[in-house]
View 1 (cartoon, rainbow, N blue to C red):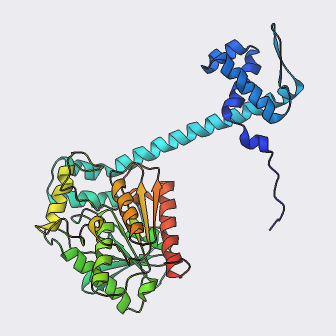
View 2 (view 1 turned 180 degrees about the horizontal axis):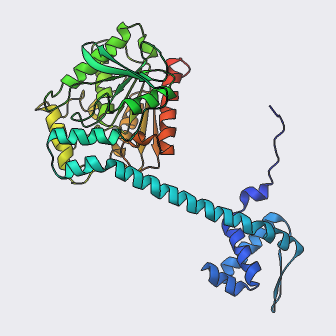
Length: 395
């Protein structure tokens, strides 16, 4: 490992692209007025840019007079090297925009089966199939091992690239408590397990409306205790969930605390859906209307009070919970859920951290196979769980 670091000229760290673009325009036009018109800025502003550039570089680049503008030798040297730099910068920006547009289009295309099914008010089985089709677009990581187990009476899958047994990651899938399956989420859960160097247990917890609250919570508790019964200490377990699965993960933590059962080492909550929207106005949401969100919530609750802290952790006392990593998308309607949860957790003395990613899609993590930010988020989530399982982070 080299102990010698390359010295970076302070001027190059202070220069801005506008300085260089202004200089190139003047050098090519040899006229400040025409260059200013070309850049759509005022001539005094352009003059100031050139003066700033000369001051930063420490030499004169242009010779000005009332009749003419000429390049100095230093100016000629800078011009020769600046033109290709600006061409590369413009090409990089164009490429980034193109890729960004392609990624956004791909995400929209992936969502379409679910969006169409919800918009057409299809029956629940059709909507469930559409949600499975969304997840079917991503294959599990290479070398992923998948095996079926019965975890405390709950059908489940154990997934991951390692043979670690028993698993130390409990993954509770999203889907508004009405949709989703262990099979559908095997790819997503395996990617997260791989990032955390472990295997994940993904229970097929019972879904509403056939099995309303507390069926899903009971299954989550049974699956968690199965992991402990198999020999994994609670301090080696991470609980993770996305969207409504993140809400279910919090319900699990609160239930374990209330029953005096061992809590896991940490929890990772991906774009949590916590506010059922039963007491607010509005009609728009990310993927479904507020009407649909309420329909899902009512099917899950089946008359159970929506303000029960167990099902609405935004109303709960969160003290004593393990460290929390909350990840959210900047353009997600559920961002306020993530922000409010993190604020309340910190107020209650919980080691909680919120990471916001510049993405518009709810549960953007499911696009890990082609969206770099989703891949980065899963890697950060896996590393968070790994550090806490290893006891490297304060609780």
